Length: 530
Image 1 (cartoon, one colour):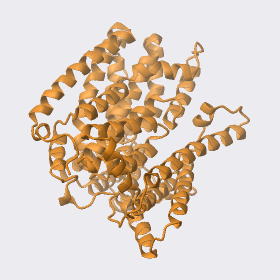
Image 2: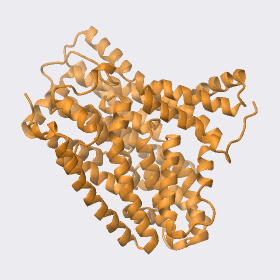
Image 3: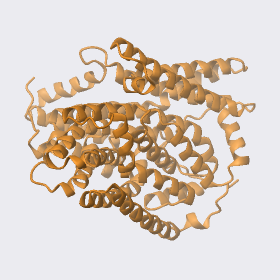
Image 4: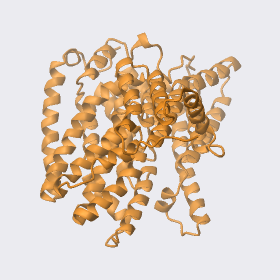
């Protein structure tokens, strides 16, 4: 089937624009993604309706079969189902209730429950998918007890997951980025340092990730609720954790809980899940190193790991462990059946959205939206402005395509070429600005899989999460832009970082005033409302 190329046309922006604008206006994610898919397919097939239908059908088939089983996608979908079942089994075990009782005696404030969530998000840095879902499972019972809205929980999860993964070398993100950096350095004959050292040097230059983490910490500790978030928090304090008019959000089955549950019923399956997933990541990476006749190293294993296979392997081990623990209890067979069915069903909304998002991402790739956006930065541009420009373009690309990893793959080599041609001393700041922009755009995009999974992990309606996170993400983007502008004009990391730091402190002061004015949240008691 002959498809039209749009790599040099602004029409390549139409499909993601339709999906994003409709999602914001209608708040119906599947409808919006479907409209984006149809729009993109029509463009690719020259507006031929019959060929368009065939292209859309092929897009859905490609999610599962692309010259063979698409195991990566299948494993992610299976992992979601497995995690849904694990969550349900934890629920019927009484683990969530027991953890809530335990935490209530130790975590006395709403801020405390939020700070604990952020802490968990930071220490579970293996992978953003796993982070989003695991932290949600652990924290939700506690934040629910302290009447923290599901939208706030989704923000706390999302704004720790990607930012911590993108600055940690021993993570799926870090390994992927280090591999790209190594290729870029080799291409331009840079041998002064290893790719790992370059990655670590770029961490303080990744201004969006650094200050997004700082913002989420301040938001949790100071209970900073601005914009739509204040509305959701006020509703939560009145006992309405999510918008019930939209029905139950994903991941929220109603199950009978065992009154004899223990904290270990909640914690131990999650710990087993974390350890087994981490072990699987090292094992699959080590197998790849052996296959390529390379020496083993932990970093090398993470660089070559099969993330999705590791997730489903760790998930199945965690599921078996949860089942074995429950077999010692006298639990009625009907309750088992309901837990499995409801746990699986709870993940269906997220699965539907992910499948549609993958189809749209494939069409966006064929439209070459990323290449068109990248071409906009080429030309006679002063090197002083390149870091901030690359941040903006990478942000737009990740927002439009819904993928930070895809943006890394396209924009990092382009940034490397531009730095080599303009000013080689700006290589690392420019690469860091691409990483920062990609995470920013991914945070804002309603079609991002990480954003979708954060909504799922928190059991929050997806567009509620997107809308409440936007003010925080956009504000930190402005902080990062100020830093990159200063960094580019002075060619000094120190000046750029401190310019961003000053802007961040001003932002926190502004947010504090806004949070105080927003009102009822300030007036309500901070401790648990019985």
